[in-house]
Image (cartoon, rainbow, N blue to C red; front, top):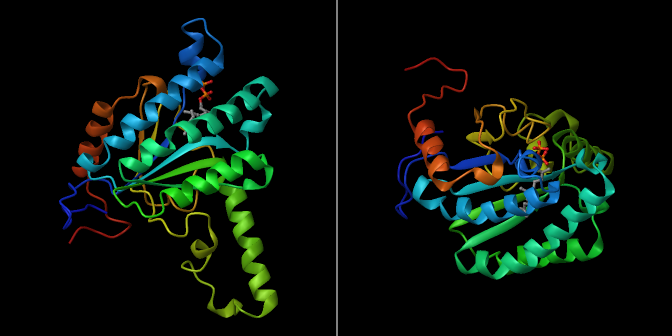
Length: 244
Ligand code: FPP
């Protein structure tokens, strides 16, 4: 939805931007470095983009950090990424909290190690009072997996008798998704030149606008983010209706 400046003076723009941060591996390979070098560079990009949100009218930013399919990568890369997430949360927690960022995580936590889950829980609690920018980090997240887990809980409520199947409509399932407190994304950006959505926010992005850009994630800047936000602002979204 196109947004006007709100009472807090937030500029008009895509209220919720979701980003598929792709291209870390190629960025590292181009420099003759291991893939994890690219992931570390990618992690350093995140803060600049989060900080650029308010001036671009972005209240919600959701980033794809690790997918349910990423476990298929080498053990070295997977364990390096898990360590990176732990370090990122430990190091960035205070800084994100101090600049007014509320952090949430989506995805299935069951397969993540206990220490990481504890850090995620603590960061959610630490930042729960913040409201300037809502940063959601998708970790062990897959859209199909999310819908399957949601359906399981929905079916349990039916079995318990707390949900009448006759009342199920398209407003019902989102209440069971990991994103139940978030608005749907207005704009989905994928870096690195690939035009795929790779199982990201499948249900939620039904009406999102998409931007597939060539920049590799570690080279993505606040300036480019701002350009895409302004381009979004000039678009005409009709949600299947005709123009009035
Ligand atoms: C895709 O690039 C990126 C990932 C699978 C990991 C994303 C992680 C980060 C950006 C860093 C950590 C983020 C946080 C929030 C701490 P790729 O490896 O598929 O790149 P390639 O397509 O060039 O191989």
